[in-house]
Length: 169
Image (cartoon, rainbow, N blue to C red):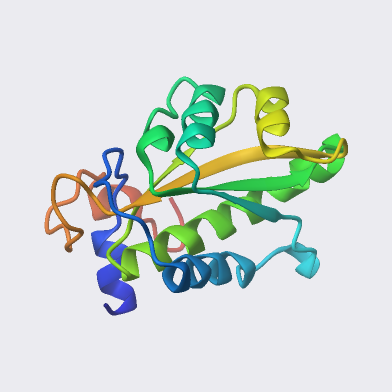
């Protein structure tokens, strides 16, 4: 798939086929996250990859909207320092890593969906994080159960001319 096709095909997938993701594909997706840009190249993240069904089901309970994690083939937990000033600065960088991961997955025909973490203490226990780390986001991954990824011709987005301003508002 070409870059534009991955961008045009990516959508939030919350229902996954019961099919594992090959280790080579999973590593390529993780490498995309590792290569994401960050402020001053600080790379404020670590990734914990979860593939065990019991652990995925428990992890799905750390946010009201994370049910898709329970049925995913794999979920990547984005981990950062829990020092408030570090965590705040890292949010933009984590967003870039998230999008890199999701586009790399789409390029491979693998669906994804991001989730917040409302209960970081439980997530930390489930992931056995060190005391100075916190789980900021989750990205579930898997092959879509309903339909494969394909470019979306008419996305449900605001009209281009409504949101693009050139030079001034």
